[in-house]
Length: 582
Image 1 (cartoon, rainbow, N blue to C red):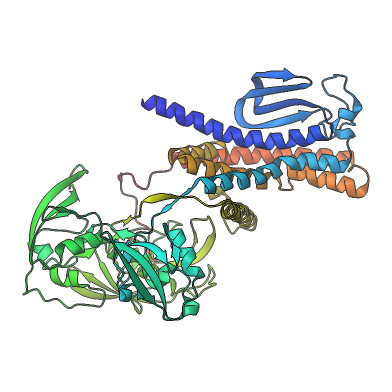
Image 2 (cartoon, one colour):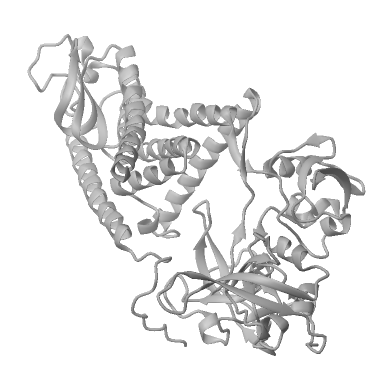
C-alpha cells in the first residue's frame, strides 16, 4: 500500500509538471503552425527519444529526461538562413527563419504567454467549483474589544453581516469591508442552535476595515498550559508548563474557550492532561485533582484574567517556550538580555499581553514604519512573571530582514523567542463562486502572483532577497508539486497554475536562449529591418547557454542542500554551541 501511494504521488507529480511543459510547447506549436512553419519535433522531456508517433513532418515524442520539453521547427537555427540541419528537403515557406521577424517574435512569445493565460482558466474553474475556506466560526474574542462588548463568544458561528449571508471568514471580511455603518455592525450568529443578532459598536469608522479590528479572531488557542506560579492551585496540584488539558471532570476539551467554560463556577476539578515523557519522548496521560485556594492571593495584572486569578492557569501562548538565534544565526536579544523559557509575558511597552498578536504588535512598535536594516530599534520594557516573581527587563530588539507568507522581504524588529501551545483553526468548507466573481478572483490571483514574482526577481537582482532561498531547480519543482498533491486536488491545481506563472515570467526574461532573449533579438531585427550581426547573435547564444548551464548546476546544488538540511521539528541531537552575545 505504501509503495502504491508513493507511485501514485510520483505519477501525479509527473502529470502536473508534464502539463506545464505541454501547455508551454503547445503555445509555440500552434502559433508556428498558424504561420505555416513546419514543425520537426514536439517533445515532452529532453534527451534521447523514449517513444512517440510521427504524423506528417512532425515527430510527437516523449524523451527520457523529464526536465522540460521543446518544439523544433525547420530552420530553427538562429544563425542559419532557413536551411534544414537534417538535410531534409522542405519548402522554404515552412522554414522558421524565412518568416518575417514579427511572426518569429509571436511564435517565440506564444509559449510563455500561454503559461500566463493558463492560470486564468485554472483559477476560474477552481473558484467556480469551490475554494476551501475557513468556516465562519469564532475562535477567540479579544478582551475589551467591540465584539466582546456586543456579546460575541468563542464558538459562535457568524451567518450574516448586516443583510449579507456569510458562510466563511472570507465572506465575513468582504461583507465588513463593504459596510458603511453609522454606529454599529449587526452580526447574525448561531449559538448552540439558537439564532441571535448582535450589534457590534464602532469606535472610529475610518479605521475599521477588517474583522480583526472588531476583536474577532478565527483562530482558537489549544489547551496547552503555562504555569507561571508554583504556589498556585494548579502548580501545587502538579501541573506544569507544556501540559495539555484533555478533559475536565470527564468532559473533553479541545480549545481554550472550552476549558474556561468547563471550569466556570467550580472550586474543585479533575483534569486529565497530556505531557511529554521526561525520558524517551512520546506522550503520556496524567490525572490531577485541583482545588481553589482562597489563601493564594498573588498580585494580579491587567493581562491576568479571571481563570488565572482563580486557578493560576494561563494559556501556553502567553509564555516563552523557545529561545533561539536570529535568522543569520547570531545571538538573539532573548538569549542575551534576560528572557528564559517558562517566563510569562505580562506587558510589553504599553501593551498588556493577552494573546500572541499582542507580542508581535508591541515589538513592531520599536521600529518606525519604513525602517531600514541598518536602523536601531528602541529599547522595549518587558514585564514578566517567572516562577511567581515579577521581573522588569529592558530588551532592545534586533532589526532583521524577514520574509512573509507571500515571499516578500521586509525589515522588522525581532526579540527571538516563540510561544508554547498552538492555534486551532476552523474547519474548511467549499465556497463556490458565480462565473463573474470566479473570473474576477482568477484575474486578481494571476496578476497578483505574477507581480510578486517580478518583484522578487528584482529584489534578487538588487541583492534585496537571497537567490539561494528563492530559486529552485527540478528537484524543488517536483517536491513542491508533490506536497501540493498530498493536500488535495484544489491545492494541486492551484500549484500548477502558480508554477505556470513562474514558467511564463522566467521565460520572458531577456536572457539569450530563453524565449525572452529571442523576443528581444527579433524585436531588434524588426525595428532595424535586418537581422543583428551574425557574430553578435553567436556570442549572445553562447553566453546564454553558459548562463543557463551554470544556473542549472547552482540551483540543483541548492535543491540537494535543502533536502539534507536538518528538520526544525525533529528531536534535537548534540546541542550546538550557543551564539555569543556582544
